[in-house]
Length: 121
Image (cartoon, rainbow, N blue to C red; front, side, top):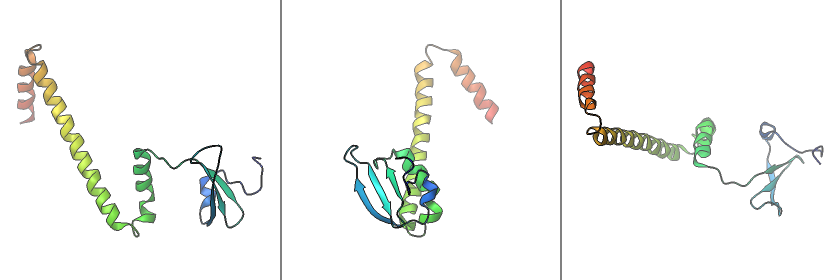
């Protein structure tokens, strides 16, 4: 079966191909066979990508999709920046919380923090 003519096993072989049909595979819910107009075909797993996969896909496909989806990419960029800022703020709160929670158990922490602030000035 793996030598059947037209079986595509490398995604790069799909460049420029046109999909003729998408047929579900009964043995694996969500999986399909993609049939192309040139007689080739590929088996695809379920389309349930993780958020990190979608993010990487959007980044990698940007040169190809940005012209068609400029407004969506602008919103995506805004949300990515907002997420970065939220993560930064959360890290800051975590650090400040750790300092506050440990001041009583580690009295020298306060002095060390004062020294660090002086170094930064």
